[in-house]
Every structure is written in structure tokens, then in C-alpha cells.
Length: 228
Length: 127
Image (cartoon, each protein chain N blue to C red):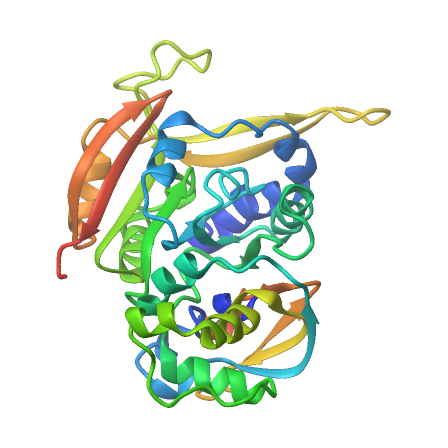
């Protein structure tokens, strides 16, 4: 019998990130330019979420925002808090909680914006990916905007070699090298989004696509709650 | 976790979202840390419309702060009221819950806060 999507993600997403957290974090320091420009375009005092914040690299991008960050990996959340606190000082540590993207602990329609970078593609069924986007849309008020990034199938120029026509559900190895230890390989699950699919998922989740595009092997969408 | 964050957090259990008693979460055995940070009135004024004032009043009294006005100020009123700006700044941004629990009054679930980080992962029977 196949495992449930929840059990599959626990093995191929959650436990992998907890195991690779420090190594993963050490490779993720540079914010992507498009996401930084989205964050710097928001009015001062805007309040928003970073769902799946990883090591928190987007939290210091615009110090005039209040960002409430979350991640499913407690190891990454602790790293985000320690790392970013070095920049912000102890009086204003980053606001981070441990939470699952499908059971978010936020008041409905309360925030101005949400960013969700490289998270939705770790959900292993289309239904769960749409539920994930719905959960993000539920958090923003009528005028609020949600930015979603997910890995693209069309990565013709990357070393990974996927492209149009490749299998969309993939296990991607993470090879962890640490001093004095044998190399360890972890398999992370990804759904590789084909052109147009992220927009379809946003609409199925009840959202309205405001802008969309492609950057560095990823599809992105800025959307709002269409029921606003 | 700052008191500002607490104003946006509710129970992670789906069945609780529709119940008014699931929000705000109630701090229990909370250890508070207070640090001085520079006041930025513009930021507070901008955040004001996003606050749930009734919930903030509840949280403030549960944490032992002096009572807040019954009605929220307008943005203009807040801008003109230095004392209220300082009080809100102190409550929302300078006060952090470092240890303790956050309790949902609807389902009774307790979320632990350790080293300032709350954990909202649910046991499988509550997902």
C-alpha cells in the first residue's frame, strides 16, 4: 500500500529538512531579487507572513515591515531566530513560529501580504497544493497580496536537466557533506510546476492572479483573494 | 514572541477557526522579557487598523498591563496622543513572551513557547 500523502511528506520533506537544516541554511543566504523588490515595495508598517521561512533570509530585507514567519522544520526555525537575531539585536528578534502550511495559526483576513517561497511544491498531491494556496489566501484581507514561488519543470538551462515533458513528481537528492563524516544523501520530494499550472492552482483555490512570471528556474504568482 | 504577533495568532485546529472562543490565545505561565527599543510612531499608526483591539485588550489585561481604552483610537487620535503611542509601543513591540504556553479556550489545546518560539504543530488527532 502507498503511504498517505502526510506520511510521504513526513519522510521526504519534513524529516529531511530537520536533518539537513544547518547545511541547507549555509547554502541559502542570498535573497532572490524579485522577492526583495516585492518586500521593499510595500508601505512601511505593513504586516505580513513568510510561510516556510527556512533560515529567515527574507526577514531583514525591509526593516519597516512586521513579518511573522513560520516553518514546518523546528530546526530551521531555531536557526532563523539565531541567525537573524545577530542582525536585529536581542530587542527585536525575528518573529518565528513552528507551523504546518496546511494548519496555519493565523487569524483569517488579518494581514497585508504573504510570501511563500519554495514551499507549495513540497506538497505531494494537487489537492494539497491547492489547499496550501487557499490557506495563504485566507490570511490576507481584501486588498492583501500573496506571492508564491514554486520550482519549474522548465529548467532547460539548469544542471538538473528537467524540461517540458519530464516527469513532474520527483525525488531530488540532497548530498550532505560534513567534516569527518561519511557523505549522506537525502531524497526530497518536489512537484515541478509546468507553465500555467501555478495560475490554475491559484484559481482553483479561489484566488485571483494579479501578476505571474518566471525567474531562475521558478514560476511565481502574485495573487489576491477573489472573494474580497 | 512579541505581543504584536500574538494579536495575529489563533488556534491551528481547523474546527476552531469558526469559534470566537479560539481567539485570542491565552498566555499561561508566561515569562515576559522587556527590552527598550526606539519608538516609531508611523509604524504604530500604520499597524493600528490591522489590530484586533478587543483581543489586544484581553491580552493586555491577562499579562497584567494597565487597561487599554475600550474603543481603539483612530489613526489621527493615536498620532496626537504621545502617551498612548508609548504605551502601545511598550506593549506590542517591547514586550516578548519568552517561555510559557498559549491556550485555546475552544479546544483547550496548549501550544508551548520555548526561547520565544511557539510551536503550532498539532498532534495527529487534531489535524
